[in-house]
Amino acid sequence: MLLELKNIKKQFKNNHVLKGIDLSVEKGEVIAIIGPSGSGKTTLLRNINFLETADSGSMLFREQQIDLAKPTKKQILWARRHMAMVFQNYNLFKNKTALKNISEGLVFGQNKSKTEADELACQALDQVGLLGKKDFYPSQLSGGQQQRIGIARATVLNPDIVLFDEPTSALDPELVGTVLHDMKTLADKGQTMIVVTHQMSFARNVASRVAFFSDGEILEEGRSDEIFDHPQHERTQQFLSAIAEDY
Ligand SMILES: Nc1ncnc2c1ncn2[C@@H]1O[C@H](COP(=O)(O)OP(=O)(O)OP(=O)(O)O)[C@@H](O)[C@H]1O
Ligand SMILES: [Mg+2]
Image (cartoon, rainbow, N blue to C red; front, side, top):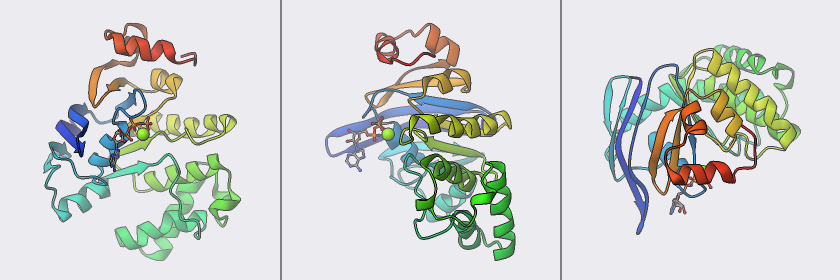
């Protein structure tokens, strides 16, 4: 098992946002997390990546046990070296070129030389077909291109797992496909990923497993065809039938 989350709880004031999340991820799996707005999907990813501190719960990652309520600085740095996150709004630095958005983290975070970092960044850009845009600033790129650079940045060091938080939801509809295509390519290469998505066709066709979130809990979880064809829970059935998309 690459990642095992146990009983993660998080509340904001009286709002119990995560009510005890358990989730296991094997190497090479693509897990889609679907569910209604406000159910805690983003909060879960932020807790796993230490952008938020859980009230309780643990994470076993690459055989290291981490208490998510009391992670040490060393554990946080170590875990972040092996996992990466892709955000809904790209989170690129506006005053840095595409190349520097990728390479600077390698120089400051990973102690690579400037030359080596630039070389790695060029390879990563090439993989998403954007090497030609390496000297462009985010404002000169489409949303889809920015997000693909976000993906290049996240995957440049071959992380063990990539966490995606609705990577296509801020995109114009005709750009969604290009980003999903990059994600599918990554999945086909065996990249382990957890993807929070409203893109049901992606969840169905690319994910190996789907977890349905509702109100701070995983209501059901299973192979994607099982969840889509035979949802057990009434809330899941309701959610899926309310979605207009064909999947
Ligand atoms: N920093 C915070 N402070 C207070 N409340 C928060 C904070 N972050 C999230 N919440 C609350 O936690 C709940 C879950 O939010 P979260 O963003 O995890 O939902 P989500 O499932 O990702 O929704 P969406 O599909 O709309 O992105 C919401 O009620 C939200 O208001
Ligand atoms: Mg969210």
